Image 1 (cartoon, rainbow, N blue to C red):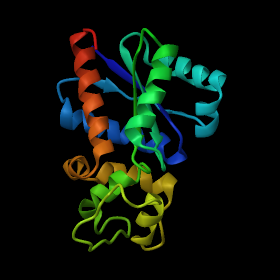
Image 2: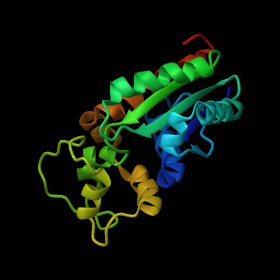
Image 3: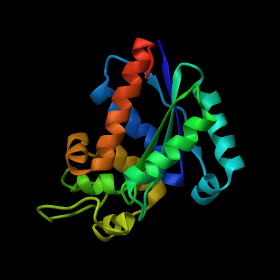
Image 4: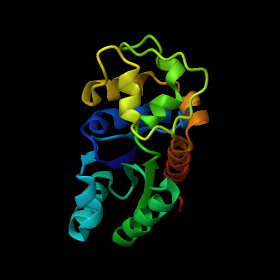
Length: 201
């Protein structure tokens, strides 16, 4: 049985990067299931969250993309918000729009790039990245993109480097170093297993 994850993201880089990451996550966490990961729907975060019509329209589009045997995943940067609190609030709104769908919300603590910081040792030597710091609090830097850029010769380019780093990071390192990445992994296992069993979430 084919399972589909229809995702909503806010950044240009994540449109290409998230499918790479999710396919790797599938191979790592649920190798028994085939999961189709179509191109994410990109939204402007403020409009998506603050305009009910935009919020509903994009969620309905994601629901159509994944069909009845699928899962709608909303991935946004938390920035300065508490990922757990903000994510719970958005998830409640999303489930009210899609009461019959499987829906989850993951807020990357600070930014998606915090997951790269969590797995920084695995990126050393790739694409000009060099970091000798022995221990890094991955979700502390306010500007995760800037932190990554400071450790790269030539700087960080979201559109090209984000998909490449998503293909390179050590997933276990990211899991160990980032609570928000663990949330993504937990949701992946929960929903993919539920879909594989064709049972209720």
